[in-house]
Image 1 (cartoon, rainbow, N blue to C red):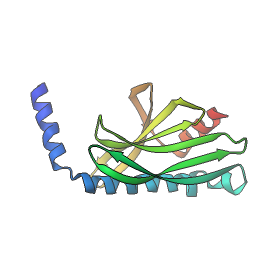
Image 2 (cartoon, rainbow, N blue to C red):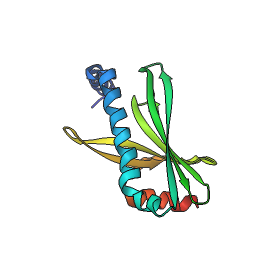
Image 3 (cartoon, rainbow, N blue to C red):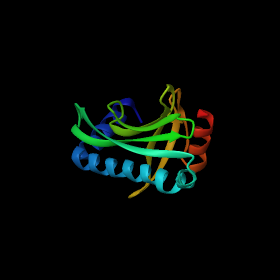
Image 4 (cartoon, rainbow, N blue to C red):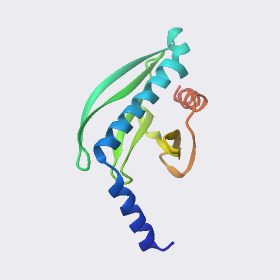
Length: 151
């Protein structure tokens, strides 16, 4: 496929996307992932007093999609280390991403995004901010590994 054909295909795909509908879908997906983290993946750690969660509502403005509200998930570890799951909108590829990072070292972050599998089915994947070519499934084990590396 030539460059022109690829660009035309991309343009046609972007035209089909309703920004308001996509925004609502993505914000709901982000909320689902945040609650998967707090209510399932890390719940036992919270129950044992090893970490705490805080949801911080924020308002954002973006040229492409306008104003929207979302939530940052803060994870406080027992030693007061703070890790954030911060939703951001990427103008580059016109989709929401979640940045997962230790607050005092935001450059060493991973980027989490949704990947379409089949109609109405998605999976969460991640990649290191320094290497976007290689991605992995974002799972409980991967989150635990990231947190362990923050200690």
